[in-house]
Length: 355
Image 1: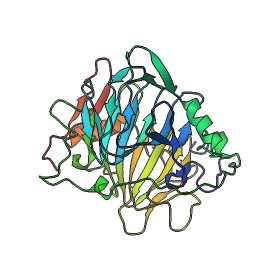
Image 2: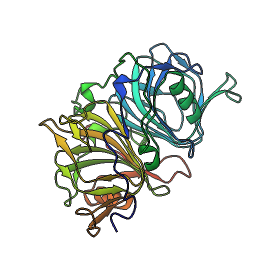
Image 3: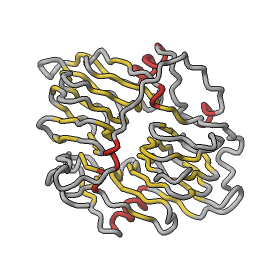
């Protein structure tokens, strides 16, 4: 049964990944001072992923998120003004913005770079905050990539089987991933991202590591669990081997430290700044840490992961949103409801001063 999903899937190399440092910044005309590195764009769901840079002094107009968004701050700080998700998100902060959330116009105080996963378009508003001046959509990501000769990661197993198009030569333009992204804050340098009653932005460095007994070498920080969609957002410390498994739902990852040994990849693995997208049905016989440095990455898991012991062996475990939430509950790590009415997401929460 474990071979029944995709018996002919035999990709080579990094079919679902991209080195974000090698992608040029593309200025977004809808918001001067905003630049993007496009990673993935779905023509089916309208979802897209990108590294986003906002430059100090940029004036970002009011926006409405027509679909949800999650983000992870890699460097700098992002302040969102008064509203349902008001916060100052510093390095290492995970944020979740529900659909239909309006964020008021703001001026950027310092350069900030973050990984953004957009589950639908973003509308940029005119000064009256009632009229739309422009939209940022998955199609815009596709056009921006095409204009620069970039190849976005494939969305499906079938696309993974096709030859990857040759991207035009690009000048390396590194993403800034601050060393502080993994450093536990001290009493004098704690992030103000978490305030009492505000769960939509959380300093992930203060969320405890949790370990599932079935995978003792892999520790998790559970950040978001959606009862409606089954999507789970995590930070993963992967210092061992994950055995044979299928991604029954898609997943994406950004390496923050260390190197990951990935199917048919180089002996040294893939390191900091490499972003992966695993399409639904992707198979790994093993993924593992390479070297001595902690392998730590962000993860969005869009459906269950099924584990077995090799081809044609029985299923031994299925990991879904229910298991991730149960892991947090069993360890007394609080998950709280979204503060936005109608949103069924559970979010991590940790008061300032916790470790």
